[in-house]
Amino acid sequence: MVNKAIFKKLQKKIEEYRPQMIAFQKEITRIKAMSPASGGEGEWDKTIYIKEFLTKKGLTDIVQIDAPDPQAKNQKRPNLIVRMPGKSAKRNIWIMAHTDVVPEGDLKKWDTDPFEVIEKDGKLYGRGTEDNQQSLTSAIFTTLAFHELHLQPAYNLNLIIVADEETGSKYGISYILKNKPDLLKKEDIIIVPDAGLPDGSQIEVAEKGIMWMRFITKGKQCHASTPDMGINAFRAASHLVVRLEKLKKKFNIKNKVFEPPKSTFEPTKKEANVPNVNTIPGEDIFYLDCRILPEYSVKEVMEEIRHICDTVEKDFEVKVEIDTTQREDAAPATPIDSPVVKKLTAAIKAIYKIKARPMGIGGGTVAAIFRRAGLHVAAWSKIDDVCHQPNEYCIIDNMVNDSKVFAHICLQDD
Ligand SMILES: [Zn+2]
Image 1 (cartoon, protein in one colour):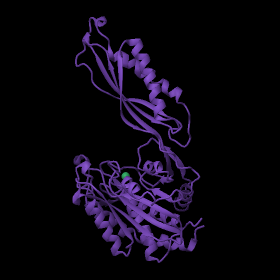
Image 2 (cartoon, rainbow, N blue to C red; image 1 turned 90 degrees about the horizontal axis):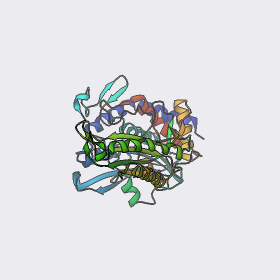
Image 3 (cartoon, helix red, strand yellow; image 1 turned 30 degrees about the vertical axis):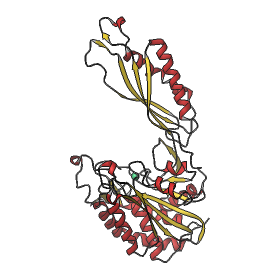
Image 4 (cartoon, rainbow, N blue to C red; image 1 turned 45 degrees about the vertical axis):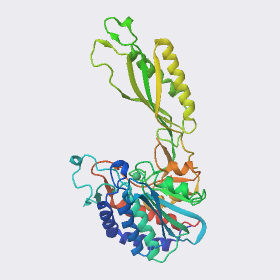
């Protein structure tokens, strides 16, 4: 149950914050926070700015957790946990956002300075404005609204403001979960607002397993006019590409939570072989991108692939070597009837008047780190998904209204 009068007050307060939210976005965009792995000095300055901003506003229950990193400014990657006690300590609400941004990329592709926010047509343009500062700002101002109105959320509200999301999370959420294993609990409401659709209808609850493979087919090079003197690796590899299509039939379970609802096996990159037309290639290299439903293990797919390679080796007298450049089993899915999904669904309906639905995606988000730790987490936000692109922007209405969604969740006392 949500007290309508109180929710109205919160909505009004958040709406009044609009200019402050825009100003906050401008300030934090100026403070470049790139991980040393991307050529930056880390998140120190930005995180300290945020900490001081919160402290000045009276939000003083802040724990700073520094992950040591010799490459970063002050040899530390700072993370913050901002806490606000709720009416009940039965469970905690956690909203996670990250401070780091990806590099601006090719400056010629930007219409404006990536680190000087420009407001235009209801949008804020700049690197990081959507990923992940939109949600960072939304969550901070939700907390501020409760604080300034002297209201209490139904449960303890905690913001986790992390470093290093863009380059693997080792110094961010993985560090926190490793060093404070009892901090988050299975019954907690954990939201990662760092994925979503333009209409806000996607609540991401599951990911596919992921495997990237490199196939090196070895034959014997010779002159193209005397093909019998060699073994054409390109021909054998081409048959292999076609035989790999069998994977679709073998691993054919459909799971409607996912879009697309099936495992996918796509040949993608192809390396150049011989530079001239009149040589039989002795070696061929191509790649396969596999996205595997949680119903299957990466291992069983791998075994089937090896078996298919064996048939090609036998039929074409080649050797096929396989390298796995990326391999990750699917993390256990968040149940679609878990409290975090129910609460988000109710809040999204109240603010955006739409029915959101739990969905699975192709893989590779930070939410999987929580799921592997046995926690129920949902990734949600209302975004155009222009992250990492030139001319990245945040829609101001989304930033303000997502903040109201978080406020609604904080008021739900069931
Ligand atoms: Zn992000």
